[in-house]
Every structure is written in structure tokens, then in C-alpha cells.
Image (cartoon, rainbow, N blue to C red; front, side):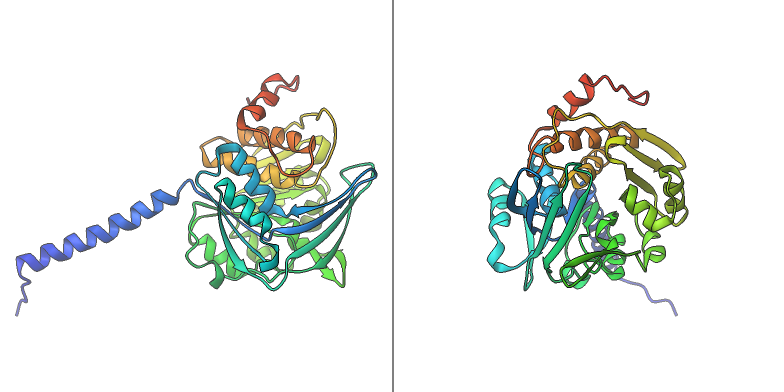
Length: 329
């Protein structure tokens, strides 16, 4: 016996299916170019040979300010977690027009960063820790690119990476995964779950120290190849004054470092690099163009205290006027 649906019921079912499919497709398109940075805003005490200051910090704080100055925070969301008594930097960002989602925490991360005459060298203490992020706490957060600004080893578990990978591109700064806090002191550690995590990471930023801890390799190209072999699609290795190396699809891009007019504050330079790189990649730039843009942003950040506060045009001016002309550009 054949069961026939009324014509109207069939049409109604098809229309409903098409509407649901269209809604899902529209949702994907809506978030395709959106960048979401997830990480703790911190209380930072910055100590240099000549100055001492207290200020907000953390990857998420530097990333959000840089995005605001590049394009007014368009297609960007910051997801952070801090104590209710430390909302001033959040209020500041919201007043600027940046979208900020706050997950309540019992405490705010409190870092003490002490620099020597060489700004590439830093010692660090952690005076307080915030609650870690969980997959459950990030339900409903949508974006095309998720950047995890890890500060400490337990900020993001594998469950968070796995959940976000199902929704978009996952970018990670490795620095926090290699920091373990015992008492107030920060100890360098390897990333126990790195082999499983790296298979789910699309873009990974490491510096010369972090690449060696993760891979055992002392040379940037060798370290990048190892990380790619473990599953990372794009590897960015920052090398301070020596520039950076980007590996994507088995192709290396050697990125120059643009000399600053003066070195004022290196805090947040790595975060600024990640911002510039992801900003340009999300707009369709190739890894070389994105890497040079990120390097020029970092130079401008190095010349002043606090987050990046210049404009996109200022970044292009650095690249256009520099005697260091890359063949790829």
C-alpha cells in the first residue's frame, strides 16, 4: 500500500526545509569574516629599568584595542573573564564600541612583568588567577575565526578547542600553554596534550623559545615543519629583532622585522602580531602580506606603552617607506 501525502503538506515540508537551510547558510555567511578573541583581561604591573606602571593587559585586551584602531572593532567580539570589581577595562572597550561578552570569574589574572635593558627578556610572576574557560561557558559564541589568547596552562582545555573547531577556524597563541603557576612563580612546561590539540588548530603562533619547548628544534623552519607535521595548517614563528617565519601549505614566508624609532614597551607585541595576521588573513590576504602587516603593527606597538593605538594607514606607511623591501610584496 502506498501512502500519499497531500500536495500542500509536501510543499509545506519542502518550504520549511528550505527556510531552515537558508537560515543556517545565512548564519555561516554572517559570521564568516568575524574574529572572536577569547582570553582573560589581566591586571599587569610593568617594571622596566626606567619606569613602573599598573595597567590592564592580556592577549584579549591588546587584541581588542588593536582591532578597534584598525577598523573600529567591526566584525569583532571579545569574550573575556574577570572579577566583577575589575570591570573598568571592559567598560572602556564597550564605550569605544567594541562588543565584549564577560564570563564572571572569582578573580582577575594579576601579572607582574619585569623587563631588563633588552626588551626581549622578561621575568614574570602571577599574583592571582582567574577561572578557566569551558566549552559550556562559550556556548552561543559564533565567529569565523576564534583566537585563543592563552595566558596560563589551564585557561583552555581540549574540550574548548574541540567545540570551537566545529564552529570555525581556531587560532592559538601557545604562550599560556607553556606556563605553569606554582605559588606566585611561573615555570616553563611542555604542553602535555599538544599532539591532540595541534590536530585541531588552524593557526598557531609561537616565539623562538616556545617553538623549541614544543618541538625540540632550535631552528625556526625546522620547528615550523614539525608543528605542521603534527597537524597545524599555518605556523607563525616570531623571532623578535630577526623578524618572523610563516609556514602554510609547505611554503615558507620569511618576514622582516621593521626597526622601531625607539623601543618603549615590548608588552603585547606578540598579541599585536596575531591581531594583524588574522585581520589580514580574514580579509583575503596571503600569508606573506599578512605577515608583513603583522610585523609592521608590532613595530608601531613597540614604540609606545599600552596597546596598539595607530591606524591601518600607519601600518601601510611603515611597509611602504621601509628600506626593507620584501620580494613577496
